[in-house]
Length: 179
Image 1 (cartoon, rainbow, N blue to C red):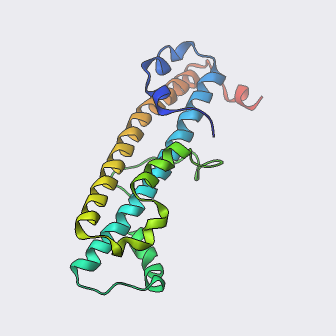
Image 2 (image 1 turned 45 degrees about the vertical axis):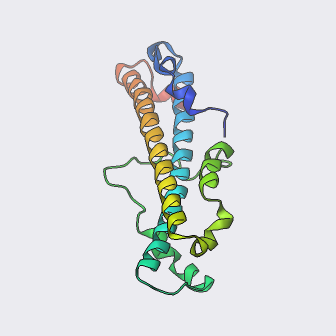
């Protein structure tokens, strides 16, 4: 995990003059952005999981069902968390399948600030208003993270386009990559 942040990638200077950057530096920028995107994606999924849990609690109340025991809740987790695992649209094929050494504390802290992990088991104790506010806060956070990811995707696209241009033009070769 590097010290690379979204502010850096969002700075127009980050993608200006890409044609003048050495190939190694261009690849390093792409890799840093890809790692950050993967971390944002992971944090977004953590947020969505919390949204799913809050919504499941609201649905349980709406149906008038009794509060489930911890064992029943654990049995229901695959169904609750599996319902919204894929957003609409083509998506992106991940370059990595899991965060490296760990998600940046600052990213995961955003989720914990809204709904700490230790409170997940006590959603039934919240009032309907508290549950609604929590859902609104989590939804706002998910929207913010999605916006950040889209912005980062634009940067990744520009970096990738420059790499592709170099390979097509012959400025970069696969042989050089292997050496």
